[in-house]
Length: 151
Image 1 (cartoon, rainbow, N blue to C red):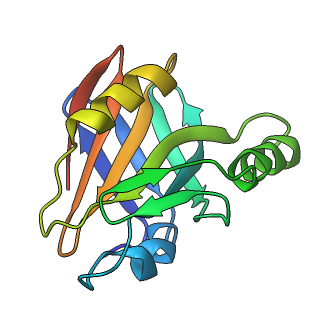
Image 2: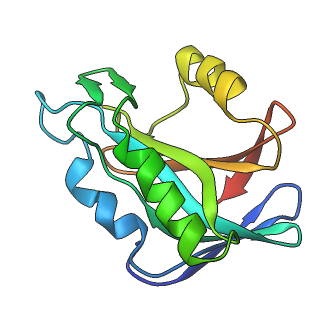
């Protein structure tokens, strides 16, 4: 599904362009096995007016906390990943959202996810992605609210 370029539409009219192959990098992290742990990282992209362009994602680092039903981003590699994009693009590409996995076939955000997004995601609209075993859940986090995205 994610190996070709996609344009998704949010409920508020925001378009999200996802470059080909970006989310394909995340396939190995799906929690298909009964003992697999949650994984996560950051999403890199740029704002184009009211729209978003997604260009890359970071993957879990050695210092991240990974449990069956919890992921904590603690490794500095995510910050370095974002800074490298920011420098290479002269400031146009940077941290634009978060992704993580859930051990569910059809994922939904947990209460802990919402609390974390309220704490971390401020300012411009941010893309939030949860990868499930069989399907994915995406939304924009805008002004402390979730805005649905049609897949």
